[in-house]
Image 1 (spheres, rainbow, N blue to C red):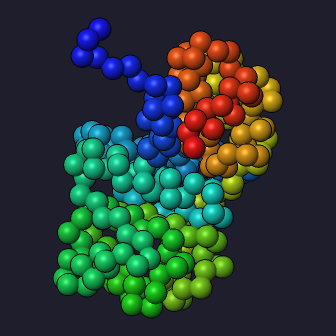
Image 2 (cartoon, rainbow, N blue to C red; image 1 turned 90 degrees about the horizontal axis):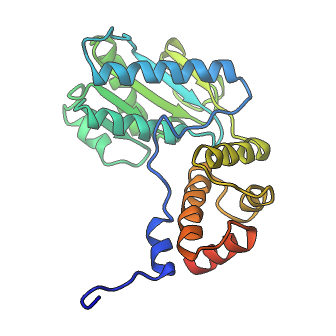
Length: 249
């Protein structure tokens, strides 16, 4: 039809091959300490439900410390909570090492938010640790303030001021683990089945070896692969995966 242009397969895949936004629903738990991790997710979902409907029982939380190695999903959870809080108009402050917002707090703006999300607490500089400790002290006096923070190790292994470590220990602590390759393969296959995609057995292991190893990116690629298969009218095979990635580049 005159005046209309068709979209090339390459352009199409470039548009959709993006990692999905972090959410609690697309966070995948490791089998290690699964009971503890399920307790964490139950707690976070209870918190979100309270934000969505403040007539629910207030979980009355003060400090939550989530720790684990790189790739275990700590930042994913914080960003997911930040998004949920914003969607429900809960005043939130997201902080990380080097953030200019630490200076904002120092200028008398402590406790103007209800939720403080602090990522990688073990990398805070000395002046940021001072601000963080003040925030912990002042928040203790206000039962409506919640602090959720993350680090790479349990509290006992952190190189932080002892008064900060003591405060973190007094809160609720959860440890996360990275998914092993078998768990990633299972997660990719489970997502594929849920979306009605028939995925040959060799694709998930190949992706883990040759593509981004973080699970959200891997799952996003499966969705892109499904779109690409439909548009090119080709069955999903490892050759089609390689063709998709070649076009992406």
